[in-house]
Amino acid sequence: MFLLFSILCRFAISLIVRAL
Image 1 (cartoon, rainbow, N blue to C red):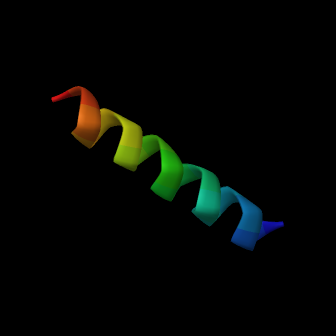
Image 2 (cartoon, rainbow, N blue to C red):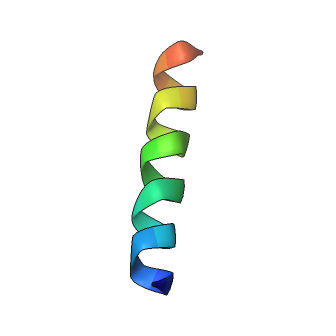
């Protein structure tokens, strides 16, 4: 479960970086 949360966080950060 924690692994899935980590992957989602990484994906979210990636999208934020692309938005900037």
